[in-house]
Image 1 (cartoon, helix red, strand yellow):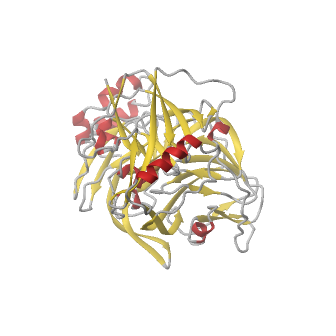
Image 2: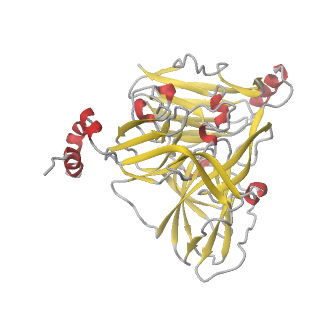
Image 3: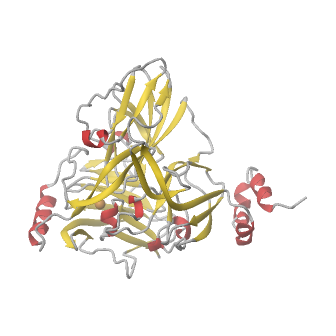
Length: 484
Ligand SMILES: [Cu+2]
């Protein structure tokens, strides 16, 4: 019989002493000799959005979205990443607390997966909940690179104890295709609760006046929209039965856009944000998700019919951003009913009374847009400084174990989906409203608004903070944290 140390360790990991054995399981020779648990292959492929619209882009394992990877919290996985393209790639494990060398960000020192090469990685998935994986390369002005491609897939890390309470899980990945550059539009200002601050507006206007370029900077627009890689009306409907409780895991895998979602006649009970259970589950008629955000929402199917579950933006929905929900025994043309305006307010899902712990230090970060400053692209600065891709110099130093508060002041009209790698954070103030208990890894900062979140420095190694809007991160909106 062949001695297979890996499978032995795997079965031992289920034993009560798993924690003691874990370090052995990470040994290098074991990683190199064992078979991978998962294989991701990066390559060009086709996505049939509809019979008339077939997108050619870069994919994981030839499909969009990439395969749903189900991990077990705390149980180590080995992943082989093959890169069949002509350019080096990076796979970022979004929302997981793993070491910098496997996190998938060059700025943190993760090695690239070479062109026409491969890299084997191993890590212990955590924390449990809805995460995802996506490319983390710089696209700049190249819309065939980075998150403009189809390189995104869902991850679900099974908790050690599953609360259950639903009949079925449905994963929805929202994503646009066929991107083009255009001279800026205006951001949807009706997505988020809270008001713009006069002081921040004036700061933004002053920067606009100083700009040498009078035209707006480039923005990305899209021709085609899809859920799970199918335009509205072209995929298989979600088949439901009356009375069923369906748990939707929704991921906004857009490179640049804020998305909304509504299902006429139904409400979403928000149970988790970015995969983390919320302290106060609440019912909402509309979901709003910034780039890379996830929402887990329970829907009780109590309104029989054939419905369009779709984006509130008419143009985007008509170009595919939706999916049909069909009750058993019902037929006919899918119906869309425009919901009443609804502003997204994270504090609704927070603790109503408890105050968050006090931070050891507060770092204030003011965000400014420099109109069309970089060959027609807007440049972004944090306290006057744009991230340098050349030096990749760390900006902030943190001490392990300390709690830090980041106070963001947005002197631009854009919504910024702020993302912190390798750590979770707790929202403490959103547009002037105090809160606690909402744990996330991406959060939307409204135009001319302020937002505060706390994180505990509990995962040593270089850590990237950036806006998840690809155009913003590529043109200055990043900062590196290092541990003392
Ligand atoms: Cu941004």
